[in-house]
Amino acid sequence: MTEVVFFSILVKILPLISETVAFTGSVNQQWAVASFSSRSMPPSAHQAACYHWLVTYRDIIRITVPTHLTTIGSSLLNMRDSKISIVWWIALAALVAAHSYPVSLGLSWLNLTEADWKKKTPEQAQRFMQDFVDINGRRLLLPDLLAWGTALLAVTLNLTAWVSQGSG
Image 1 (cartoon, one colour):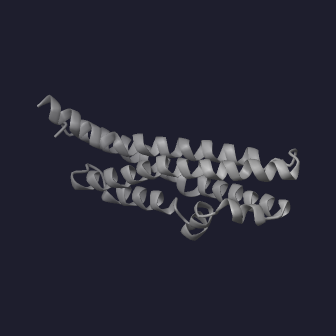
Image 2 (tube, one colour):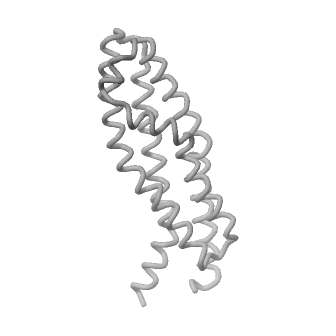
Image 3 (tube, helix red, strand yellow):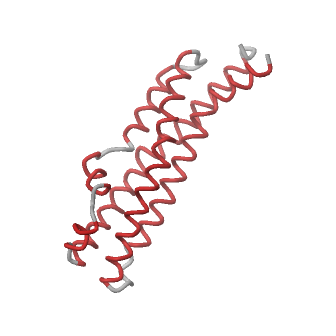
């Protein structure tokens, strides 16, 4: 019985846990990429540093994608026996999915080769990184922050309703 209750609680809080990890990753990613958009570096050093950051960014994607998928999956699991409207879980899944917009731009960042990067002028590299900062900043405020807030509210409301109805 204790294992069932533990598993039930885990499923109920998993969307908040995974979305908190994803949101924290997005904030850290934005902070890191914004630091590279500083114009205080010489253009050639800036261009070299940015490419190495972009290579590291690919590793960040490998970490954050599972957290986004966990949030979506656990939201769908919670729809089955949720004590609140399933609209909360659908909204959360939709907001998390919106994180990947625009997919084509993200793929262009992920598929950028060192040879392609070296062909860019320092001004093009600076503009490329500034676009990255701007898009990430908007994405952080709109879908990511809203998704985290939705996860917090949905999990809190669902747990409160679950406890008030006798944990059944």
